[in-house]
Amino acid sequence: MKKGFMITPWEVSGDIDYSKLIKQFGTEKINDELLKRIKKHTGKLHFMLRRGVFFSHRDLNWLFDQYENGNKFYLYTGRGPSGKMHLGHLLPLVITKWLQDKFKSKLYFQMTDDEKFVVKRNLSLEETNRFAYENALDVIAMGFDPKKTVIFSDVDSAGILYKQALKVAKKLTFSTAKAVFGFTNETNVGLIFYTSMQSVPAFLESVFKKKNIPCLIPHAIDQDPFFRGVAREILPKLGYYKPAAIHCTFLPSLTKDGKMSSSNENSAIFTTDDKEEVKFKVMNAFTGGRDTLKEQEKKGGRPEICIVYKYLYMMFEDNDKKLSKRVEECKKGKIMCKDCKRYLIDKINDFLEDHQRKRKKAEKELDLFFTLKN
Ligand code: TYM
Image (cartoon, rainbow, N blue to C red):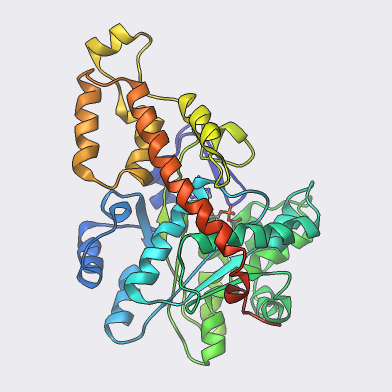
């Protein structure tokens, strides 16, 4: 592990070495063979898969064995509603939507207003519950099919979820929870119990359909402890399949250190930011530029450390040719950081203009998605 590196579901900091993480967490790399297998079913590969933004997985080959034998999978992902959503939170949703379209899969989307209430000292239950519905606007705006998507708040659907969470919790010892999540004697018991709640949607469809249905969970790697340490350990003991998962890297903070995070306003672009805010934040982002324009013209820029480039690579420039041309020109000192920043600002603002319009429309569509009634 690189120095100063830390990753838990509630805190991510430092310079993350993703290949070491694969070893440490015991996941598998998404290799060319697997990409070919996915492509066989999807026709084209999403650029986030092709470029390794989604870099690791659990049991995807098993999932496709099942799929090829006619046992279709459903999707499950979620959000901890503790405030506004930022672009990083949308990244797993991009691939989730793509997978829903390609495989016509049902999606369960968990809003963990319970988790965020027990974790965040400064938030009331009313606030996290309100954010669950506010954040759902962003989820809906991503274009999920209302006929195939169920969004729910843990608190408001507790009547259904609690019964299932109890079955998981009964098999989860405190010593396992401590080992997996690093809990201490100071951890509140609400959070300890919550760890079982995040397993529930990984077998909920099997409960409803009264037969085993494979589940695939797209998420960033920080959520892996929930699935590695709880769901995948305990679900087989309850007679259900282990969920499969596909993991993305983190959209970095604009200011370089760590991942994009709501706790540092300037590190993040929120889905509700206006054009001027986006411009201000990107203009102040960390780049691979040199100290002076002259030096940059001479030596060229360094895309390998540039956050603006990372945003284009990971999320905002799907055209490989355009991207590599930009890299070449940067390295030769033919384009300067402000050119790339302007390019990214336009890309983000175009995306957000559309997203914010859909988000507004979603205010009238909440009932179509919140259908998990107690
Ligand atoms: P939360 O709200 O912390 O994050 C929501 C989703 O966004 C991912 N994520 C990121 N992805 C890319 N770049 C970033 N900078 C970035 N920051 C966060 C997270 O990995 C997550 O996929 N406990 C969960 C809620 C949850 C959940 C789930 C998430 C419940 N069930 C199943 C994923 C799958 C949470 O607080 O997520």
